[in-house]
Image (cartoon, rainbow, N blue to C red; front, top):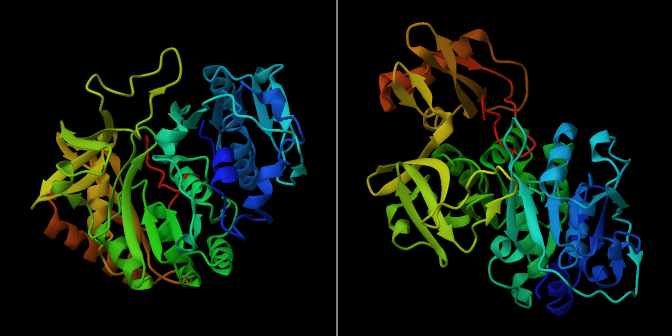
Length: 463
């Protein structure tokens, strides 16, 4: 039976490989004879376990210890609202809750078995045997409402089994994501199964401080959402790392951002990937262009099938999740075996471009507007770092398009009114040249920042 622990102990880790947390580090080699649970692992054998550690380093160690022992692991990100935890516990049929800080004071949890965990490892010589093919359950990352619980296996998350690392694999991974979200978990698994180091982030850590730590650890490979990367560029600290590989996923990567990253990291591979919690990893794009070649539909990655139906991308493959948990859960895998991602595409000159989510359309007098499509145009302006397009109610058309824009800069004094007035007019003019009239923002407002969720994505109204 393959598990993270057996992979580490049989395949091994490169010398010096560590998990680097905000407050310390743990060598991967130490995990063979150590426990995060103070010798209480057997209490969780065969159980459905909710992993609710606040510290990301503790969570990283827990996943290795529990995989192959627990029947099910539910990965709760630290920002999960307390009012949603009882429903997560009920839906997952949870037997136990593992946490690393003060007990979670939620009365509805009742007498749920609780076990404490710590990144301060306890040495143990107790034989460890694998008894279960653990089901991994991830939570969707919507900004409102209770999350859905998505069921995976280690195979569907990680793909083919690991191989022994070699000197050629001496890379150091990092990610802006939390590893309990799909994008971060992908990087975590690459590091563990490859036996290499991983620098963990923290949602409360300033971007510049995180990049300082990553640079000091010699990070060579790093991932994040496009919003993560825009914030890194805004911080003025992006050049504190010198990666060989830069990865974007989770949101649309527009041409303006790809060009900016190429300018800052001229020697790195700049890759944007399509992946989602439900559909898994579908493909990578490495040609430096937004969107992806239409030829990918005929020649996708191994083990993946792609199609566009009713304007949305559909994916079938070994990396798909199996189902949503819950008695009244919606269907995840369609009757033909494909997962509908809900991401809408438009074909232009032999290339597909993502234009937005199926549920995020603005209706302007019966005409559809995808906010992300307008943002892609706005973000090409040389003085724009990021933007958010949304609807504003209108008594005549039902809605109009408005935009909030963050300028490039060093965080100095706010620009003068004449500067912002000129910029907003330039943005509107560029939208008029590139878009139909109903998609052009009727108002552009310059703002110092945009709200970002803990998953590293722009917070969109109604998302």
